[in-house]
Length: 299
Image 1 (spheres, rainbow, N blue to C red):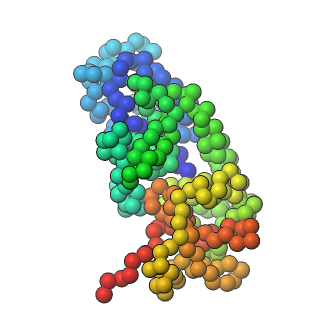
Image 2: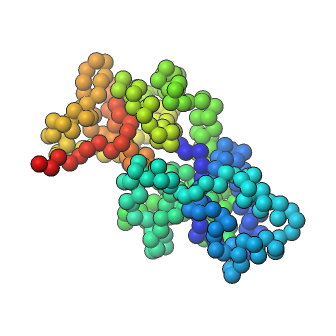
């Protein structure tokens, strides 16, 4: 689970300046919940229009004293830390598979904040600039299938995501880190999740974003808040199951026995995988990492 939200740039320009006050309240509420950063596809001051035909400087001139203070605070990272772009250069390689997905909103190809809310498994934040953004969820088409992304343009929309915020808060309270994970894994996952010994080294190599996402998914499963079937997962193709090299890559240790794992969760935002094996009311986790090879080497 990432600790940032993403901005839906499609909610600009504003119909009127009152939408900014609502947006300010949303960001402040998110900050109180621990989401202190908002990612945008560019710096806010670089957006060409805030109101129709009005630049940021001109928009500033239309505000009253209190509104001007809020806007200054926002631009200067006083409410949320503004980061851009939505996917940083150093994250592109790890997100390559996710970036290749095609997203459409209302028939138009998009790869902005709404798409990245799905990629990062977080919430898209919009200005409440029209009725279409006055919703707690937005429907996108992803690879010709409809998907739902979390969305908010006013704090009332947060009620839909009480469980999401609660899980984020619980994870923060536990203080799960890559440094303490292995020694405290049974404390963090007391019910059904069991980690194979190979995981110890894998965890240390993960990007923090991937680590946090993996922990969020596995804690939901361990606490019975979600089932594996709630996530996008699959087994392997015959070309994998008959290839000795690929089998070896997917073989992990349970009670000193080497066992082939073929089922894997594919819901990590950047195309990473979680390989698992269900056995005797336990779910063994053998691998968390980059997409494993599934094509034979060319000769």
